[in-house]
Image 1: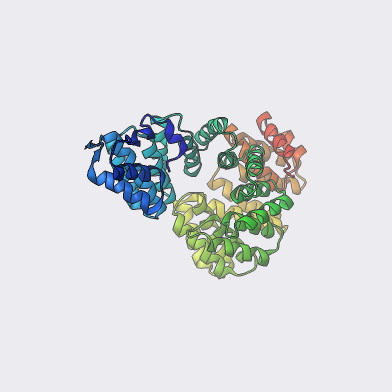
Image 2 (image 1 turned 135 degrees about the vertical axis):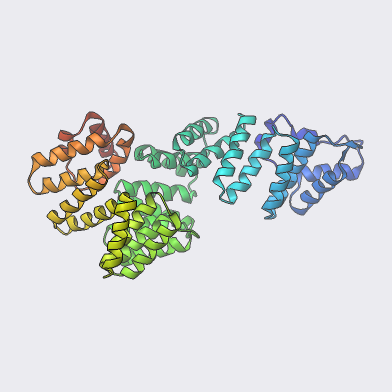
Length: 449
């Protein structure tokens, strides 16, 4: 049956109600097409479409479009997406302002992972019928998948205003806030989602990821465990729990969850990088290299490509493949300085953890030369000076880092500062008011320094 919001469309479902005087067979087809399911629904709709008649007269384009949408739902239920889309394409050609047809075609594209096509159809559905809340919600969720987080927040906020008990909308809103590093707002939305639907595994997994970012490991693990109780193959929960274990230096236990997460997702995902890190930490360099190479091949560009390529350079070096490491690093210096800088950054972090402050400082300085506008490199340079007792130079570096952090980056710094070895008082002495505000907001929701 069509979603209840279709009742609001200008092409009312009542158009399918045949007069009582019409022949019994036609009345039965009309009822079955509208109200039944499965093969009965599909066959009844097909007879109407094939006959091209209603009440003994040719069926209008508007009414035929409605029948096509009904049949598309039967095809969809039978696992025949191509046939469903064909009917919806035809319905849209016959009735270009029929919002329900765009909405249901968007659902079919969504199932196929075609975010760009589904987003366009949900947008057309909302444009043709702004009161169609289901389409508004779906458009908001599609904006999340497309990385258009401000638009997602606008749509989902309005959707929740209209339908305040929609746990999916709260979960989507939480994801949008989390992507913008507004973890306090994200956690609040995920809380609402699980309160409305205690069986909503994805919301627990997403809340766990936020708590992981806030270094609230105990509650993060509890959320991941609950998510896996509801959905044992949740790659988000498996990967999240693995990250907690990895951070707690339980590398072998983390590998079990990392591997399960990767098996449950058919394409490369960020957990491959984390599994590679776990392999690296346990000295399994060849396996680490395989993971980093796979991510770099799959991504080809973007932040995950940069991270994987940078880690690959260091993995080659650790595996005794110095010529490959040097060749890749040299190529990165010439063609992709962001990769070379990220490789130096990763190496510097390892050296700093091992107490090798001077070599770490040298790597971060070189990274800052390659990418002079990356604030995090200057932040870490300041930290090295602070550890060495040179507080004056540390504050100078931190001030430079804070000057690079624009207002739009303040939320990102909430996590960067919470995850690093920095000191609240010293940072407050060095940063502008916006930076201090971000640090204080982070502290209130549980960041640790």
